[in-house]
Image (cartoon, rainbow, N blue to C red; front, top):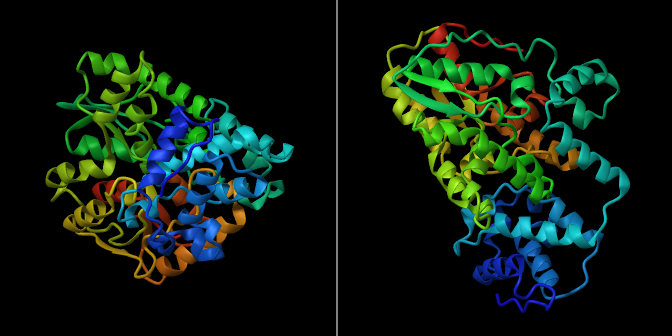
Length: 417
């Protein structure tokens, strides 16, 4: 599909990059079969092929409108279309470029701008924990899309972790909202790593990986977050004190693995960003090393029948979903995935469930219908957003798989809610 760039975009980095991506598209439409929003809405412009057409029109100088912006906003960025595409179209890259260019031309309503600003500034700041405490007090008064994201007080309690020096040392990213919303995920990660002989360290100066601002089309803000993290981690990397950067949230790991691409044009940070990206491993990737070290240490009173929901960032972005199911099965867990539509997004998608609550709720309920049919002791996933979003629609416990593994090691079986 040839794109004739308008003078406004000809020669620009965004224009040339988008044009190159669009040129790979043969317009076959296979991607629509795995697009969640196309499945819900049946509108060609709410599928990858239609959105590619909209970006192509933009680059060729055609008029864009709030309708163009809406169709791009409705995209979850799940990248299921990339898994399906026979031509290898990097749709996610194109979506970022298209949203950025449309936002520069179409001004959003004041209320929408205020919400997006609040999300990117509060979720990524040190003020999130106190804001969460206030949110718990005001929970009954908040919109349902936000109320569902606030777990009850006490649900986020974490057991203590005993720090010990280990032979192998890795750096872990604490994350921006995870320490306040679900601190036991990070604590469980440290305990599981310690049981396998790894010492997990973190750097306080590091914060949000950059994904939240990237989701909200604030590319410059995302790059600032990335530079801050690189600066925080670099001394440990430069001294050779760590062998890897381990991330237990698949949405964060795919973003950090993309640092090299996102800062490729930054002369001061490009090489460092590429080094950080090369060192980064999703916790799921480490499972193949952990399993031989943990086998035989698991207790028998833990929940064993698990329904696994693979976040899109794990399944489509990193192709690691099968690693989790295979390795947990090796440890003795009975792990099942949904028998239908296991490839579809649950509707969480970063801030999507707040900005597009109706579509997000429909996708959540559709996903839970298939997962609860498995009648598992627990639903497990690998991303906090998916966990909170799914939990808001079911009484079956929804956990990070590392929490269930930790409890099997420690003998504290998860209870039904």
